[in-house]
Image 1 (cartoon, rainbow over the protein chains, first blue to last red):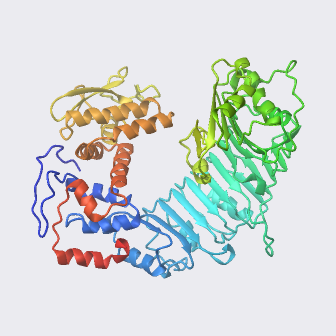
Image 2 (image 1 turned 90 degrees about the vertical axis):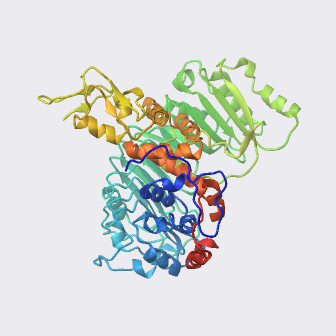
Image 3 (image 1 turned 180 degrees about the vertical axis):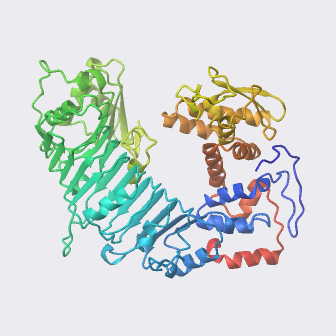
Length: 462
Length: 171
């Protein structure tokens, strides 16, 4: 609805309170629908409180699309109360640490009174509190929310014959869910618009097989807790069977598995990481790496631009094999191995076989944690001396040291003989621990390189 | 059915009448105070309102009159649209542009919201509404009233009633 854009400032007197100084109330002149949109973006408690602002604002929250985020402070009774008192559609419902879904949700599949699954519901998070195998979600959740764009289900069991219908779903997270191969297939085929998928510590299936015409990003990891629980089937293998749009393949915690990753068809793969020795076998079509050492380099992938190597001990030759596999690599991130015992520093000879990536493409290298001692100096120096189009090299270090110490570390790198005159070298010191944000790396597709800023998150430039 | 090609020029299917010159990529917009703005069709199409007008052939040679949008606000909306069609892939630059764009006085922001609402520019609406929501988040009722100049027209009894009914939100 169009309204006039200019208006004289208003002064109103109300019961019980003085007019608020010189500041005129422009916001209350916005149309109801707009105020509703704004209120709907607020956290649940904040949104509810707007009812007390003034008479104009009183009815807004109750009729605007509801944003219900019920965490620790919300009991099931309260959640039911909010849902039943609220007149408008639900835009977003996020229930975590559920012990039992509130009564209103436990309607049978046929029961149409699933009022909370409104046609407008865009975001839904249902995460139980305790172990997954006993919790289930009403099947209607997967069929009666046609506008859903973002969904996250956790700590529950998804049956094999689950009928999934999410025509607009773009982002899906399955967190500690128990499921089968058939369930996953059903989920993928029922989500024809899916762009990003986060499979976090799911059980019940040993092989995750992915085929999706639209999927652009996938993050995954197996169960961290290695405790053997009766009958639990842990994820051993991730297979990308057919993903024509896949750009990001992100093993999130590769030391915990899956032990095998196979990529059969992903012609647009751009970002790969992290890879670590926890991945016993990595197959990229016919190329095979066993514990990060190349056994066969018969397929090269020219589309890959970003590579992250985690807890990397095998050394320079192994790293160069990765560069040969990805000749157009532009950015390399390496987390140096903690114990540094397996570093194999036989110098690679480039004289008869220049590596395309170093000659033409590699622009950024980042290393952490760098101590500036032993084989890792040779490792770093190799890139200084051979990466011809390098623009930036970053080092993440720990410890407080004096200027002399930094000066020495810098000198060691033989920067004056660097292969790329334009290269800049930056030391960053560890400042604070940050939590790895797997969700963002998997789901935020607006970042061209999800590791660019976040790899050295918590490190401060010196 | 008329379609817009990648470079913004309009291509018309056989037999259909177009009111816009096939070669031209520009469209004229008039603000409420009569000022004239030339924009590319691509940028103008970010406004669903204008986009539908173009599709339905309602845009004559003169251009589009927008009696509900003043020139200073229209200029800002056009700046936003131009920036967003220009480099849709450079997401990090666009983020900092957006942050600077909404860094204006509240009343200007509300004017932009109204214009974006009328012109139906979804991305701009989302951006501005989120900005306003962010400024409201975590504030007490009193602080919000103070921030926006909202006058409390409840009686003390009415306000107490609301707070009691929704006690959980005020804890």
